[in-house]
Image (cartoon, rainbow, N blue to C red):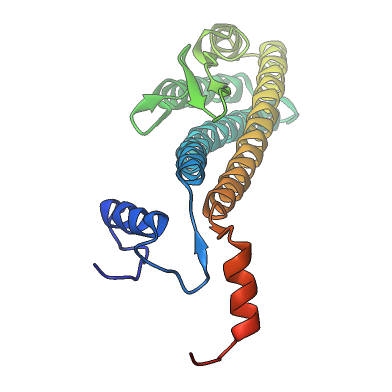
Length: 245
């Protein structure tokens, strides 16, 4: 059996070579060996490290979902801002006529239809982003991190209340009412932008912690080999040096 082990060596080959080293059938250049207890500890530590590394991937997966949700919220806010600018342009224009107000109302209703389609259709990896479904992520060491689960479609400020205000925007007074509703919706969405930002930071920090803990456990697992407990042999080797018998 070859006496070299690399990252491409099969798990079984590594185990068989460790058997020979533990049995004294193979001598290492470092003079170190390993005990059955040391191997058991190394296996347990490596298993835990592997568990943390798989959980680390979950954090990156969850970050993708939350980043997508935050981006969709920013897009919705941008649509409302555009709607707001059009209505402000007519309500603040002294030369605007009744026809101008009606046209602005028609445009606002169309903009709301586009906004609604974006809100209802927001998805990432085939999963709706704004629903009651919470994404529960295994974060290692028995910890679960939950993200999303925000059913924005059911929020009156963003949907039914806003729709009513926008639909009636055909006079100066009603446009002013619609602008108030739009401002409230924008503020509401800004709260979710901030919420998702904090979630992303939490997932990134957890990912770093898992990577660090996994690396530490791997190092500890690799350090389970020890120099032989043989005082007489060690003393004799030091005394003889290169002496030839």
